[in-house]
Image 1 (cartoon, rainbow, N blue to C red):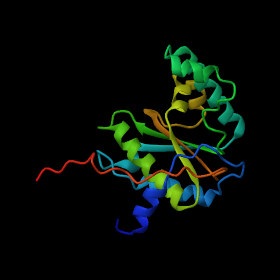
Image 2 (tube, helix red, strand yellow):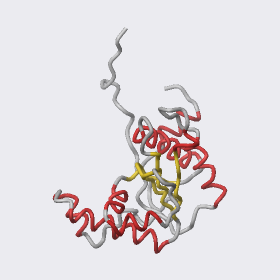
Image 3 (cartoon, rainbow, N blue to C red):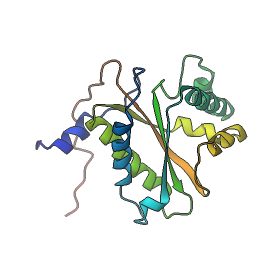
Length: 190
């Protein structure tokens, strides 16, 4: 395969679920967020349609974990109920930083736009020596009245809602090794 720094970052990026306690410096976090702002968007107006919420306060992160686990227990899906009942499971993997990616709900494709911003930030985190992981589970925290009240305290603009989230921090533990991807899942139509 061709060597290229961007492709190398893509190849080595992995979902990290073990973090040290050291917090990400503000200037490093700002670079990750900047990468999110450069994502493509369906309406081409990302600077007006996206909002990032960076949560680094341990008590708030733990509260989000508890609210998400409550929602999981109430979901009726056995695997989510099991995670919600698992006292050792922390849905944020005790990462020092959570970034909520919120979008103006009436845009053309808020889920897709949030996904593009999230992937940009994951790649930026990897390029900056951070571990990161894209998570859905924490978004369940905001499905309850208590969760929606907590969300209001974050200063989310009116008409926005979280569509994606990622955790980030300094890795603790080994980085997962993944073999090269198989190419038989690619079709060419010429």
